[in-house]
Image (cartoon, rainbow, N blue to C red; front, side, top):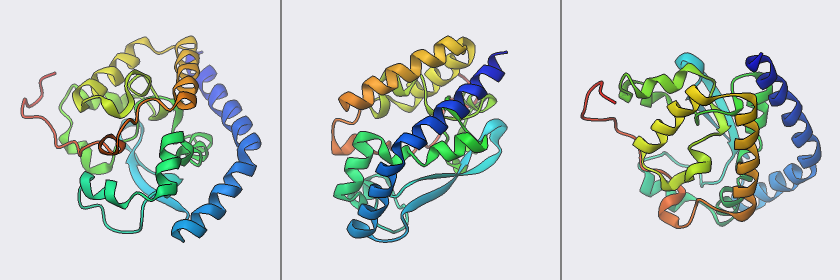
Length: 203
C-alpha cells in the first residue's frame, strides 16, 4: 500500500507543480539562453533503484566545461545559476524524472555512476529505494552535512519510510526552500567529491 500511495503522490504532486510553475519554467529557459546560452538543460547519468543508471535532467547552472573538481565547479556557476541553486529552481525539470518513474519526490539523492564502486556494504543500501528530489538528509542540513552523515540519514529513511513521513519531509522541504536554508556560502554550494571510505565494508 505504501508503494502505491507513494507513486500516486509522486504523479499527482509533480503534475500539479509543473502545471502551476510552467510560466516560471519558460522565464527560466529564456533567462538561461540570455545569461549563459545553450544548452538550457544539464543531463547527467545517475544511479537509480538497485544501481540501474538513468539520465537526470536539471536546468544548467554552470558554464559549459568539464568537471575537474568541486572547487572548479564552484567557479563555473553563473550568477543566474547561483540564484537557481539557492531557490532550488534548477531542480524543477527533475519532476519529469519523477513522472517517468526514474525517481520519487522523496528518497536518497541520486549519485553519479562513478560512486557505485566507492560505496561500502552499508552505504550501498541507499540504492534499495528510488532516489528522490528531497529526503531526510536534505531537510537535516542539505550541503552542510558530511557524506557519512548524509548516507546514515538516507539509510535511516529506508527503515522509517511511510506515506506520512514522506508528507512531513515534503512540507519541511518547502519551508527550507522558502527560507533559503542550507546553502550558506560559496564553498557549500557543491559538495566535495565522495572518494569512498578507508574502512572497507564497515558502517
